[in-house]
Image (cartoon, rainbow, N blue to C red; front, side):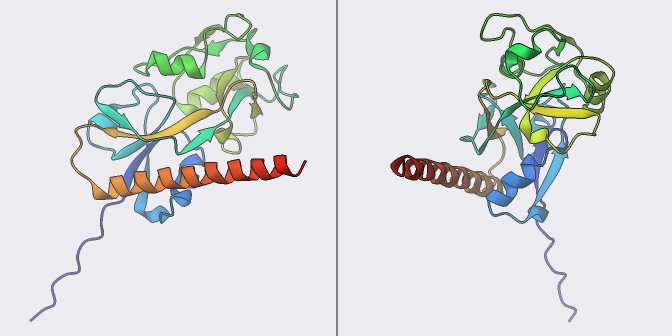
Length: 227
């Protein structure tokens, strides 16, 4: 009798990501997962939850706390330091670091499409800590649109250090240390079908993040004791 065909390989876990940051790959690696088991699926920042709600994603990476009643989030699996994106010839481009106060005189980007405004307020605040308004007037579109706007103007996008190395040379990624790093979590639909693979990945990513935090705390305590 002919041998039965081998079982089909399991479908990779579909992880929603935005842009070309290396951060998703680092999260997958830290969780101890083979990269081939996780497919990175790009979502549009203008409709960030459309693919998740359509069942085209198993998980997606999100920053800051979500208040969407149909979406569940994990504990933070990493933190993303803040940065400003500017063109290479921008008046601020020669700086090694920036304060959020430094970017206030320049155009920023307003909340795109269906992106949650309460999250955008964390990414691009309405005001600096000193009360200076941040002028959110530029349109946010695709990553290519963002690069084109930054390259052709003095606009500044308050973003994340994880983009360092993933943008063209025409754009500088400058740390903004006076804004706190953003917590990065995994999100999935509250009423999604049971998925042992999804749950195992979330648990592994959370364990990895907790172990890393404990390691940092131990190292800090040892440095303090050695003073």
